[in-house]
Image (cartoon, rainbow, N blue to C red):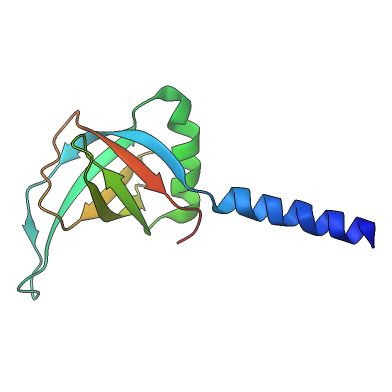
Length: 121
């Protein structure tokens, strides 16, 4: 019985560690103005192409993108405001993502955002 309890504890710890959010800084490579979507009168989106800010985060971001493409995320701008978004993987660009969001936040090249990436979609 002790072995089963120990295995359960290890599994719970592993699941908990996997579900923890990954928080890292990302640099904007390209940002957009508002884009109106055809057929949706009030739907306006913005996008930003981004990658890791710090080299030590490159592998973590690339791995997260590979396993969670299209997941909801949040990002924080330099003023400390949090915004909801979706982060999509750009397959031909290893370790780069396409951030899609609706808040009127103009992100431009070289801007830095703090990403909070959850462990599941």
